[in-house]
Image (cartoon, rainbow, N blue to C red; front, side, top):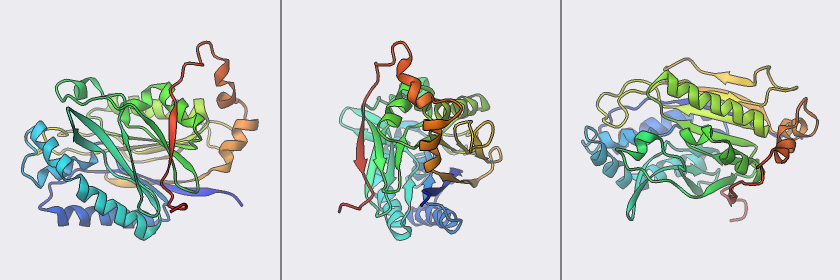
Length: 301
């Protein structure tokens, strides 16, 4: 039986919200729209949780908004876990700042089809995250087993560094996610180019989900630019160029593609090129970080 999954990548706008009920209602609408379209993997973007800062009235100050969002992480978890379990889907929530002892991390939470939560701390902060935002670097690469497939999760700038994706692929990832937040088309194209390149190198599917539109009330994310994309290796069985789906620039929407997971194994074994297999032949290819595997499928609970 062919293994297939429909992916939904969000082009997600940040809204000023009156309260947590408004936040839950918005996320519920978005999730239900994707579920009704048949999606089994839903991806929200980097810093998608920054709209929570509007609830605390602190969005005009970056560090104060970080405090609010970090404090509301339990509510973010509650909403997404409930929806993932209700619909039996995997959801990557919009990432956001989380205060840890002595540091602040950019963290994305992923919820398996029974609502079990995993998380990933962004490893490669951008220059502006490092200074003046003081976002620290994560240390652990993780592949999430959701039962039907294994998913690698990176955040934005991470996808521009090939060794991170390679470690995820070697740990079994068939899909690598790259939720992002970029202010300009230059930034958008950097992330998109990275996602396309990582799909080619590792013979995996990659998913790019950005924040879109202006949110002038937010000091952290006042301008957001991009369009979602779902990419594959450029080889037999896939579209030339490897583009499975693209959205419309800066338009709030879901972008969908159904992917055949068995094609990944096929192209790695007999594609026109075998970049996954031949990677170790590169000089210096032995220096690679390791990724852990975390089961969030609920199958063993």
